[in-house]
Image (cartoon, rainbow, N blue to C red; front, side, top):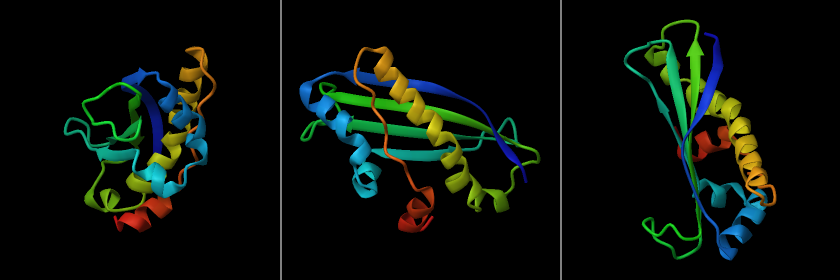
Amino acid sequence: MKMRLVGYRVVSTIFNASVPIMDILSNVSTMDMNEYSNSMSFEVIYPDHNPKDFFVLFNITLKEKDKTEDDSEGLFSIKFLSHFECDKDIDDRFKNSDFPIVNAPAIAYPFLRAFINNYFINAGYPPVLLPTYNFVKFKEKHKI
């Protein structure tokens, strides 16, 4: 089955600048995968209305240590939705394969990285480059 990235959308973003969050953002590219995995998650969504489409929703939240989820000071959060289309209807075999949990996120992630980098540059801040991410190792770690 062939798939392609159709497009992407930023669903939501929050950025409340503080010196500690800027320090975190300036060092995010050097985070190890385990540390970064605590800040980044994704899920695959299969809409009922179109059996050939699926979405990968990334959620990244970087915040100051000891801050709660409700405290938005010193926070950067983004939800990024990637839309994929297949040439055939999606079945359980496809859903249980590596495509939706390894290949599709690996295809979409560079667009998320570029968006975040440009977001900060256009906002007048230094560039923020998310670390590279190994979705194969993610799958192995979480035994998906």
